[in-house]
Length: 212
Image 1 (cartoon, rainbow, N blue to C red):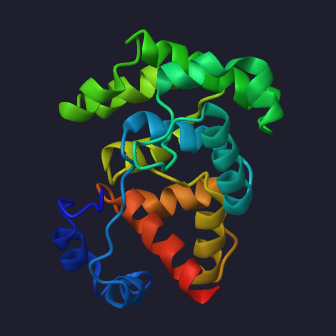
Image 2 (tube, one colour):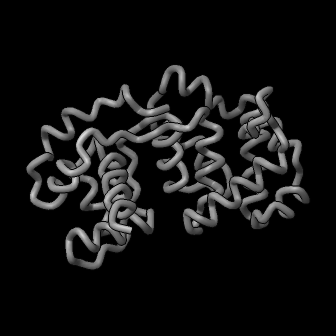
């Protein structure tokens, strides 16, 4: 979960002297991306965080966990699994604060995972071609490229998702480059860092957090 197995050394060696992002890498040397306990939790978090602030997403996630009421024997609340989210139903999710669109997406996603039509855990054990995962997830209404790439990062530790659709990444790039950074500009700029595009995004997030 701490991302300690992520192979970041080649990235740092290749880009530590990059004129634009090199200073971030040197300042944040050793940065790895924490991974959620399960791919389902990561995907649920990605859906929850669509088009809202991090603070709002954290609050919404907390209400989901409380609504599911799943706890460890020590008393700590646990993130619900797919069957438990599916069992909550539309009314409960709406009362927890989810929009109708996110409610329908979460319920559809949970049922597909519970029925093993989206075998997230099997994918995590033996990561198939990423385009297979992307295609199957994007077929679910309400799930687009940003949600998939964020879930691949947080759920599978895949460091090459292009997070050009992320508002914080675009704002960070604008500050870094001193130029307006729309989705197309961000996508083109990140493309040069493949296969570490998501790791670059993580450095941009971390730099913003440090400056706040």
